[in-house]
Image 1 (cartoon, chains in turn yellow, orange):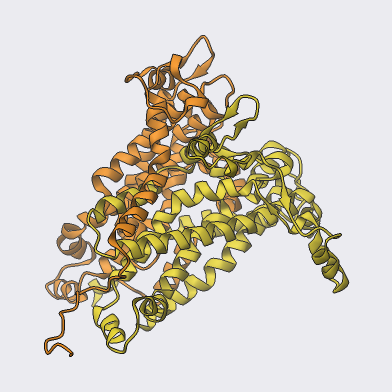
Image 2 (cartoon, chains in turn brown, green):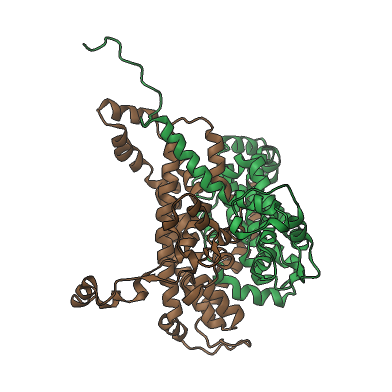
Length: 329
Length: 293
């Protein structure tokens, strides 16, 4: 009995360094950042005078931050939609017993092994539009070669923001029903973000493919067979049997891609920077500049806390339910 | 006139699109994923004379390594550093941090799967949260405390940071891996008189190799590819790893774009080689990262 107890104590001692490290470097540090965000420390030397939520008020009133939130939402929605659609499509194709499946799978997945910085550098040159005087470059040039020159555009150099103008019919309608605030560029789509979406989708869609393919392979053949006996067409089988069974995988992919896209930083730094009129700026970039270039630590901390809250809203319910499920099992 | 013997059905569902269309789509996507690699390779191998943005897609006239040499060694006349120093810094940071975090993950995974105690599952979930947080939310106190203990702007500092923030994912992978080992084996060893370390030494460690390979590959890849910690903790060019070096190279207006492309290939090469030769394990790490094991 005694040795048993020693083993218990020793087990706890074994994980103690890690537990303490995470307690301090994750939870303690988050606490400290939260505290800093409530102080006046907006110059190089620390100043822990309490100012309440003033940094957050400044932040939400800041045009650049409003643009950043808009860009993050646009990026997250487009990136998730593109990655899930392409990933699922490729998984279904690879599930048709194709020759060379291993080759295709490796090709689709290899960008996952590469750093966002490399991806950013390469795609910056690929999507560099060139100029009307000197000629097109990169993908624009390729489009020209393929006779698709009408598809050329400025990619990340195009500062256009698409939004519902107040003097259009739709805009006037929105104003009449009290939703006039939607008719500003703060609720628009910065088209330059599409370039970041293309690069990020190139990097991550293979991962979604791998998840879905593993899921498809896990569906028992009898289920599909039963549906077929009941007279379901192949498309119906995918719609009513396969897709519902893959829902947990879709959820997992949304969580993983979602938290990556909310935090996206490396890719923006290497590929576009904040862009013209902050057309490709994101909160993580704003946070780093505010904190480590301008030494506005409290303001930077407030951006970091908003980022953390956005990620936590996504992750915590998922973590909670998946550990719950495991304990129940 | 229905046939008496029903035609045998194929074992798996097949959408009856013409096969040709399936292969065409697969090849089209393969071209999309390989397009950047093509540009990287042909641009890197062109001679300086034939490099032109307007002839980006044309193959090189021969194989030249000038761009790679310049990206690696830098250029004194033009005044920029090559990536050789950054590459070695990345090696010095990545190797120890990978080994240390794998070791910690193995210990944690063992205890949290085979020596569960009250609250150990909650503790595990609390550890896991650490792998999802935006690191921006810990950077300010991190820089402060690293400077206080003299680790700010040093390679040991970066090793420490990567080890600590690697604990959640390595613990997760090992815990899921050890969970597949039947508890009966562990119980039997305990009855035979093995203690905590004995069970690990005789039962789990001998079969841990695949787990270690998955974790080592995963950590190697993510630490090699890290940019945020590196750019925050290593302001001094002498200790910057390859991702920061590449970003500086690419952000500089004096460096030709073919040199930038060669640099990008150099930065990607180690993790790409790992992927090509150990792709199976890489894949397992990826799936483990999605919490399902």
